[in-house]
Amino acid sequence: MQKSERQAHIRRLVEHTVIQRQGEFVTKLDALGIPVTQATISRDIKEMQLVKVPMANGQYRYSLPPEKQLAPLDKLRRTLAGAYLRGDVMAQFVHLVMSPGTAPAVGTLIDQLEDPRIFASIAGDAAILVICRGADEAESVLKMLDGMVG
Image 1 (spheres, rainbow, N blue to C red):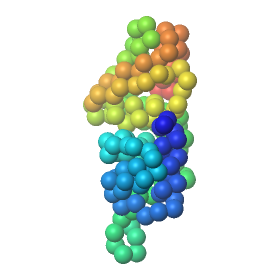
Image 2: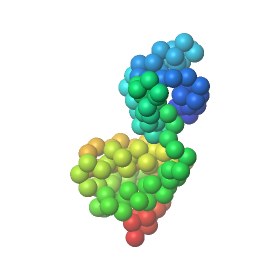
Image 3: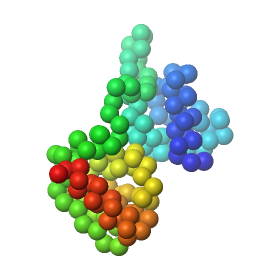
Image 4: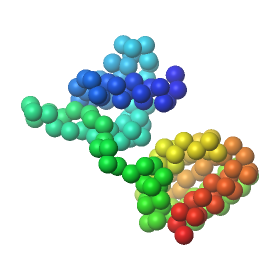
């Protein structure tokens, strides 16, 4: 099952049931015939920007983020402004150097773009490796990112 399908199931669960812990996602998805690990659920929660909101009984449950949030491209542009130091291309690889601690968030935003030029990204603490589908795509992605920061 693809990530988008799994996340659609997670969205429906959050909309129609009370989920208080990550383990409950694992159990409910497994009951639907969707085997998933807690680590995968943790990544999905981060990517989907699920938040915990209080219930009347004082406990908390997962909820979808407020609709007012910025689109991934706008969030990426804002985040890059204070985090991006430089980038370089080698073949189909784009290496991005970021301020310490900012690469995980920027990597998630890059993934959320679902840009067809990008195959995958790997974020460390202060660097991101973006693997593109080809050398031309890598040049194009770096040009786009450089353009976002001026």
